[in-house]
Length: 148
Image (tube, rainbow, N blue to C red):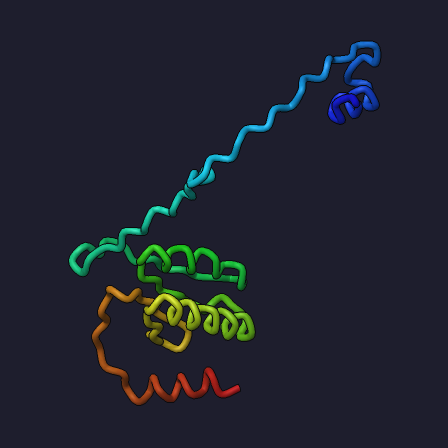
C-alpha cells in the first residue's frame, strides 16, 4: 500500500504518478518503562512591576468622547497608573456606562474610584492612597447623577 501522503500529493498534482517509493518496514520500538513524555513548558507572562508608594511618577488624564475610549483607561489602570476621567464631553448614557465599567475595573483590581466633581472621577490603584474629605454638596451631586 502506498503512502497516503504520496497519494494525496499525486491527486493534487504535486507529485508524479510513475515514481513509487519502496515501502520500508515499520519497526516498533519497545516502550520504555518509567519514561516520561516530552513536555513543552509554557511561557509565563512577565509579572507587571507595580511602583512602590514613593515611585509614583505619572497620572493619566482622559477626556473620553465615546465608550470605546474605556480601553485606554483600563490598560493604564492595569499597569498601576492612576487615571483621572473627565466625562464632560460624553452623553449621559455613555458616561453612566463608562462609570459602571470603571467601577468594575477598580473593584476587580482592588483599587478605588472616587468622584472629584460631578463629571470627573479618579481611579486609583491599590498601592495609591488618596486623602481628602467629602463635602455634603458632593454627596448631593452623586445622588443626582446616579438617581436616574
